[in-house]
Image (cartoon, rainbow, N blue to C red):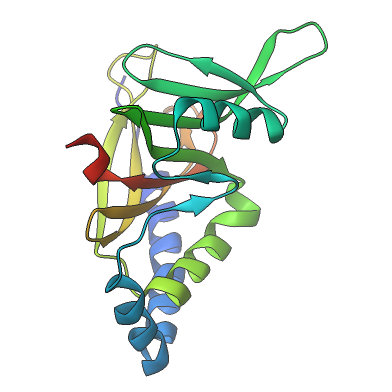
Length: 195
């Protein structure tokens, strides 16, 4: 099933216009550009929500537990922080992590689209300048063949550090039935740890 893109395109146009206004506002202030160059010139690593690049598995497990989640190791160096109910059943995934060579190299968590996406974009532009790249790409749905959503991805690169903010508008089928709610997530990574 191929999803009609007219509603998706309208959502992207609205987000694009809001994002463009934010970018123009930031570019008009040279101080932000100066801060961007100052920030990117040093050797940096992410340190967010109690998770920092280079943490060992044991440190990561302790941080996940401190934040009230359950540490679950997956195949291929993946780890999740799971929300567990009183019966011990996993009800949600709070965050995802990747460990390379025994060190934390990637941390990703979802954002509340309505409440957090534009605010997070404003913070990233204020603190780090305009994104290094902005792309739109299709992402297939798991379990629904030939159905894709469009993803708007904004990325900031600082040497081996990277921050990526993504948003996906809601997707409906040709009859208007909701297939996928709008969503957003943010990823922090230190790519040099995997080399």
